[in-house]
Image 1: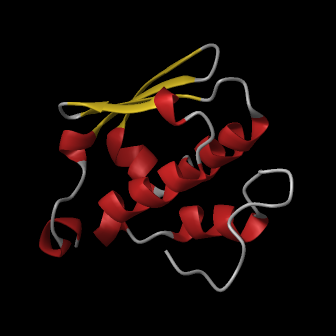
Image 2: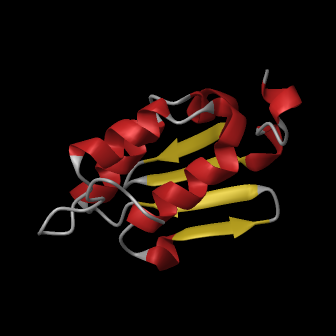
Length: 105
């Protein structure tokens, strides 16, 4: 992915610009949002898709917590959030995600 700004700072945390992009990501491209957020995610083994469910765990890392907070400010959260558990565990139902621009409109 080519970016005109850095996605991560020198310590590996998502930059403010990267987080802003998550917040502002278009509801017509939610698969793209997930791909982008996963690129930023530390502990890739804690971001898994099983069928139509996305399971993520922050691993207690504040950079991942920042990504989750940004996702919470995007329409994706309203449509797909299913469960949050103490310890930074989240489940999203991807079957509720618009698949085409027509569905998203």
